[in-house]
Image 1 (cartoon, rainbow over the protein chains, first blue to last red):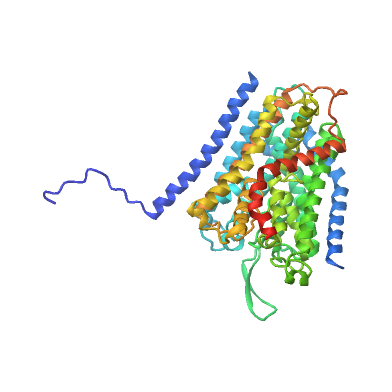
Image 2: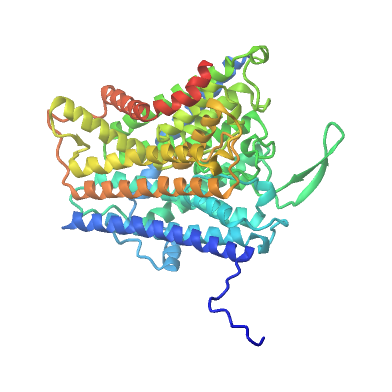
Length: 51
Length: 554
């Protein structure tokens, strides 16, 4: 429309499906982060044992 | 027959049956984990997984294999839960929400089998069989594998931390131990009246003339591994209180036997593998004494239940199935909380206050009496190291256990192991009773409400899975909190135990001298039992005082 400026900030509409997708991602990331942390700490400890 | 004699008879039969299988099954288990030969079907499995089952792994590689396997299992089970409405034979159920699917995935991969949902209403046949029942086998096999790795740590000398091969241990446990035993157990359960079918919902007429919708399903096969693997997740929401899952006193006693048989037999395999069967006998005697003490206390508490109604009925019958009676319910409750099973044949929220206190205490012991499959043995061996360390300090000698010196790094690992679960239980309880989302799920005020929360946190962190009930846990808050407790409570202790196994396997075995503390005699067994009670007592008496103890006194 004449004289109306396009919005400069994108508008994000979070639907209930979007929230579910975010929750899926959060639980998967939490799981991977936990296992990775245990493995990293064990690896450092194992390296100390070996040296 | 009076209820007292029923209780004595059941416990005597159980002890006799466990004693009969202890030696042969223990010898078989030791053979499984020391035999150099692979079966054809096992070789096929290794080829499919593309692993070298003959390669000896250092403890770190063993742990990485275990973590990788568990991570893939967890993500696969999560996906099945989120997509279960699209699976065949889903019976029209909906997909789990993200928090619920994650909680269930963590629960079954960690051998906890905590169930926030009603099995017959929320889980389809394929999800139960391909997802949950498979995890019943492999999560139990993971626990046994870790225990065997620790035993190898004691049995080996100067191996650069090599504790076996995870893939070989996992496969052998499934193929040679759990599958054949579960097959025999399923047949025995079928003979006692447990159902096995793929029937959908059917309508039956009740004795009172009404109608009821009943679900059929592969119950006997799932029930067998549910008990044998100390898993506990029931096909039906009522678990082993359901008449199609546990129809009679005979099936009840059989189920109790199944959930105790492997944990009570592994110490024999341990004794054989370290070439000193007396050591295994010392461990099993402590496990047995603690279990019998717990079972006796719980039975006494339920049979002398407070109040006129309980006394008139001859026991506290609220929440119990009359076909099992007080004795059959109390023995099941003691067995399921003494192991990491979590199956129930009565409502634990209706246990008397001291009875419920015993059930919580059994779990707080770290489930070492006799504990879960594998986790019971490695939990008890960790406590044996503490006992040796304390005895060494008392007499001014370098502590040794089975020829392995307990130094600063070993005792640091042990201390971390012992602190992990209490930290999870107490912090989890504090969060649940202080945050609004946690308070929203608590239905009872006062000490009983605290007992309900404490029970749930204890059950999750110790990977038990039984529920006290009375707490609304089907919320994102509780599903996430309990999931975190189950995950950390399973895999952090496993990492510490494998680190300990690696350190012991690296050490040269020191020959026993006149100054070595004998660890196979009654004196040491008494010390070990006392250490278990004191460690738990010092850690949890304050919170137990505010919950079950004050409730018992009021």
